[in-house]
Length: 341
Image: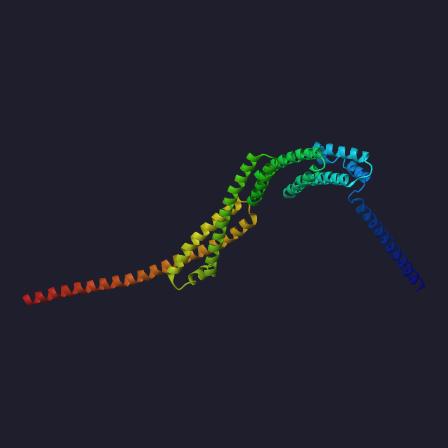
């Protein structure tokens, strides 16, 4: 009993020690996080700007667009030379830093395939360049050159993405962004070309979607009005009026044709989910059409039998009447002959 109690006590002490160690680790991590957050605050002094710009060395975006690397180098030198920052200096350094950060974000978003976010970040960089121009025209000019080249490169990439996009809505969006990128790259001819492509494709897509909607509505109405028509018995008993059955069969043929055409439209436009829905709807309409076809044939066969029986009865009566008439004629001749004798 004593041994068990001692073991339990040691286990408890071990658990407490582990818990304290875990708390210590969490506190250390939290303290580190606070330090990192503080280090990421906006620079205020010339030395802080110097360290910030120097840390940007080797950034991929600035290496590819060397205008920004030139701006970075100039900012490092100027931050090292200047002593105490006045308001104008601080505003200029802030404009340079904000421009570079926005451009780097645009570059990274483009590399990640987030084109809409890339365009937004590049537009933000342009706004920062306008701010920078009021302090340093040379650096603003360099930044403008780089951003213009970036837009042209982004337009080329978007054009390739649009040509390989399978979904029409994605292709339309990519074509529109391609036009925007070329427009901002001062390439109006390409911008007009891709704007036109986007508008034409959008009109074609809207027409296809309208056909899909109409086909779904027509098929849905047919299935709602003939709930049990997926079986032959249900199709036969769906209406007391045989003519109505024939009309529904004709309607099911037209609905199936429309749904199959809509399914082809959906597949051509890369709408996988809608293609699957229309395929399932086509199967339902096809089952209904088959049942109505069999029901229509059954009704025709039934009417044929009835007409045949009635015709047979009438013909039988005609033949019977003719035979009676002939027998009567024969009897009259025989009777006349006896009188002559």
